[in-house]
Length: 226
Length: 253
Image (cartoon, rainbow over all chains, first blue to last red; front, side, top):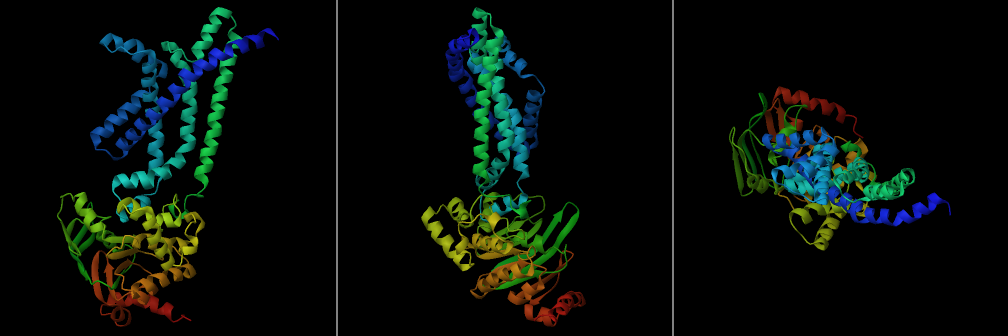
C-alpha cells in the first residue's frame, strides 16, 4: 500500500469521528436555530412596528458587514473580558446561529414578500387570523421558493464550520491539523479533509434535489398568482 | 339583512367612496355595477373588511360595527363581521399548495376546528354542488380558470356564510368558462343564497341579480330592481352605461 493511502486510511477514523461529533451537530443545530432567528427577524422587518424593525435591520447589517472569523473571536476570546465565559462549542454555536439568522432572514423576507397579496386576502376571507394565514397559507408557498437559496446557505455553513477550529473546537478540520502536527503531511491530510467536506456538501445537494421534487408536486405557481 | 350606512373610504386625500348607504335584503342578489374605478370593488371589500371604511356603519345580521376617522378597529370586531361572509375573487386565489378539496376544507379545519372527516364530507358536498367532485384531488394549477373559480366558490361557501361576496367573478374568464361560473352562481341564487357582486359583466348582472346599485366616482348614481335598471333606467348616466350592453344583447343567439 502506498504511503499516502496508508496515511489516509489511518486518519480516516479520527477525521470522520470529529465530523460526526462536532461538525455535523454544529451545522444542524446552528442551522435550525438560525432559521428560527431568521424567520423572526424577517417577520420583524416586514410586519413589526418601526423600532423593532430597526433593531432587526441593525442586527442583519452588523452580522453581514463583519467577518465570521472575527465574530467567533469576539464571542470566544473577547467576551471573557466582560465576564462572559463560554466553552468553545457553545461559542461557535452562537456565532454560527447569529450568522445564519442574518443571512437567512434576507432570504425569508424575500420569499414571504413573493407570495401574492391576494393569498393573504383569500386566507383572511375564510376567517383566518394573521398567524393562521402565515403558517397555513403564506409560509408553505414561501418555503418552496426558499429551498434553493437556503440550501446554498446550508452548504456554505457546513464548510464554514471549519472556522470553529480557530476557536479550539476539535471539529473535522482541527482533527486534520492535529494529525499534520505529528505526521508532517499537510498536503495529504488537508486534501483528505477537503474531500470529506465535499462528500458532506454532495449529500446535502442531493437532499436539496429531493426536497425540490417534493415541492414540485403541486405544479407551477398559479398563472393568476404570477 | 346587510345594511351599509354612510360608508366613506379614503386613501390619503383620495376619496374612493362617498357617503354610501345601501340595504341588502337576505336571500337576494345585488349587483354593484358601474365603470372601472367607480368604487364597486372597494365597496364590496368594505363589507368583509378587507378594506376598513374611513367612516360609516356596517350591520350584518346581529353584528354592527361603526368606523370613525383615525380610530383603529379591533381584530375581534373585524372577525365577527368577516366570519359571516365568504368571498370569491377575480383571480380565484386558490391556495396552490393544496388540492381542490383541501382548499374547500381549509377554513373548516383551521378556523372552525372541524374534525377532518366531517370537513371532507362537507367539502365533497360543495364540490358536487359546483360540479367539481371529479376534480377533488386535483392541484389548482391543473384546473381551467372556470374550474378554479368553481372550487373557489365552494371554498367561500364552506363555513356557511350569511352572504357571498363576488368580486368580478367572471372577469378573468373567457365567455365559455364564464358561462360555467354564471350557471353555478345562478343556481346558488335560486336556492336563496344572499349575494353581493361587483361586476362589469352586465350579462352576469342581468341574469342573476334582483337588485342593482349603479356606482360612479364613489357615489351611488341609481339603485333599483334589476328589471327597472336594465330596462328603464331613470338617470341619463345609467342609461348611457346600460345601452352599451343592450347593443351587445342584440347579437344574443
